[in-house]
Image (cartoon, rainbow, N blue to C red; front, top):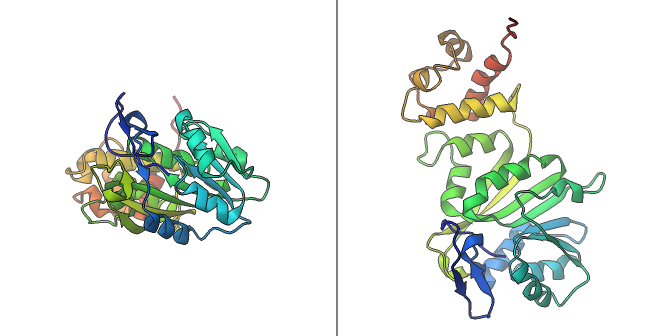
Length: 281
């Protein structure tokens, strides 16, 4: 498992003592702490019958013990240079299937057999973590659960509740799509080279919300507009989308700010917009 950091793309590489390279352009920081690896495996609790896909296996620090437990494992890796060290770490096992691909563009649903749900695990580099999360959630119909390592700041935002400092657009969008659990934090020393940020392990279970969302696209637009000007009152940030009458119908005070509303509150507003009669010229 490699680890993404907040550093942007670049050509420089960090030499590691194992002789491979952690590439800045891929946001690579290789996990090596055996205690953390054991905690991750215990949290996943893999079974031989599970169909597990690892994203960003790196040199196989997590891949090898995971493969040893379940016998068959598929991985999605973008960096060709880690493939041989990965195969060596796994003893060139026939149970390892490697998909050379960009996870942002990979069709995970194509891996699922009829009636089968995938379990996803791995690292999501910081610079693509949000779009990758939503790419995966778009394929949630074939996903049982997901266990990922991310920058702690991102996990804080994913799991935040209304009114908390970290609460924002990502918190609301995920609340409408999955159960999110912040499991534990991982310090920089667990990686080689150490990143400049703390990391965290997060567990997601895709599920429909407990409340109605008429049109998820409208819901996302309302949430984006509200948090795009989060310091403004909703009556101002949503003035081009929501009428005063609709605020009343939804039971929302237009003087409130976005960070005070739950996902269900946003859904009530978005549903009124989605149900508006279509105006014909």
